[in-house]
Image 1 (tube, rainbow, N blue to C red):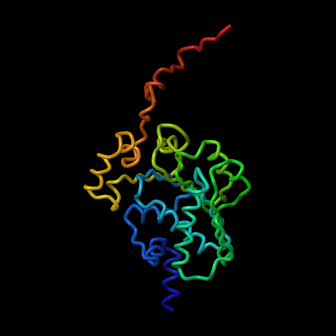
Image 2 (tube, one colour):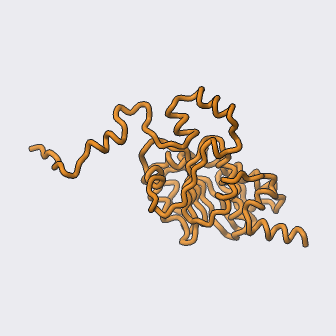
Image 3 (cartoon, rainbow, N blue to C red):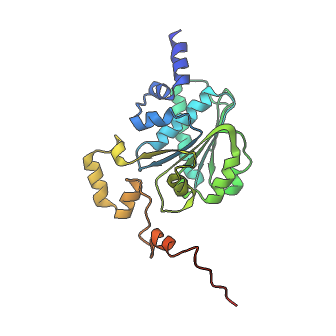
Length: 249
């Protein structure tokens, strides 16, 4: 009876589900795992635990939603496969029935749920529909056209999670981060919100990497790259709707 109650609690609360696997969620992870939002944008520093958190979310949904489809999409197949490996390790920790299928890019559970890893290419990512969860990992590096092709693949009641460090002031990820009216629930996790970093480690990172990399990868700031001759704000200021474009003969 106790096991049945524990499983019911885990089904209702992904944080309790994670705890059953020996994972103690930090405050930001608890808030993210418990989020009911169907559109979630997470701007986060490197090595704060986003892969583990997202893997737990994907597995929790797959275990307790029979027949669910979960898609993991990253700029490359290797990156997506890395997250799927994390999901597989967590599933083994549950001690449940052996998966119906366990290949390099797909995990099929005994309840019919599928977790599939895909590269961020238009041809490969098409062909899926009614996904209960789509995870866009390293989302700032997923091209705009890929993001557009992914949107119709989510179920009407499904969720999209986009997680990434910033990568310049461009692209759909940056635009959604800046748009307060987009309808996406936005999370920001810098090194100062993560228990993975103490003052000594932060100081080491600041001293080791360049100013742009530290601001982007650890403080989650969308800045211009060091290689740009002109900053984004300067370029935008150079355009005016009051000036007619010059037409060449």
